[in-house]
Every structure is written in C-alpha cells, then in structure tokens.
Length: 144
Image (tube, rainbow, N blue to C red; front, top):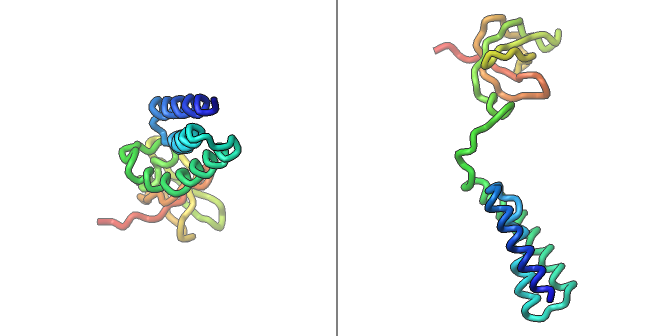
C-alpha cells in the first residue's frame, strides 16, 4: 500500500514543479519515483525512505548546478542584482577613509564606496562592481 503514497507524492511534486518551473521539487520527485519502484518490488518501508532521501539529495547536489546553467537562462535580474555592471554618476566625493560618498543610478541615490580605496570626485562616471548592504562598491570608468 506504500506504493500509492509514493505515487501520490511523485504526482504532487511534479505538479508543483510544473506550476512553478523553479527547479525546486523535481529532485524530490526523482526520489519519490525510486521509492515507488522499491515499494512495488516489496522493499521494506525503511529502505524506501532511505532511497528517497539518498536519491533526492544526490539529484539535488549533483544535477542542480548543471541544470541551473541551462534552465532559466533568460531570467531577468531584479533589484540589487540588476545594479551590478551598470554605470552611475558620483554625486558626492567618495572617500572610504572618511566614509563619504554617494552615487545616483537609475534615478536613485545610494551611498558609494570605492572598490580600490582611492577617492573619486563628484561628477565622475563609475561602474558598479558590487553591492554591500546599502552601499554601492564602485570603480572609475575609463574615458573613451
């Protein structure tokens, strides 16, 4: 009778994955199908649970990084992730030693710090290298 539970779990997990397309439950669906097959073969419940856990973890740790490279390639970065690589204009001198500096990017003003520690003058165009909390970590853009 355990095979019904594993089959139901598999169907529910696949349904969730189909609805979200976020690569979150597919790994556990793989574990559920293996446990389902073991249940059909008459394996003990503890063996089924162990197989579910081991297969799910193996799929999660070994195939997820590979799958993420090829699935959702066109995902648009949002919020802070989208700022990295953009250009901004310094609106207040950046000096890491004095803990001063500000920059405007996409119409929003942010606290700014220099990535190399060197001061940056107001009006300079910079590239956003990283975001640390509420601070942009920036570097000067070379003039073309």
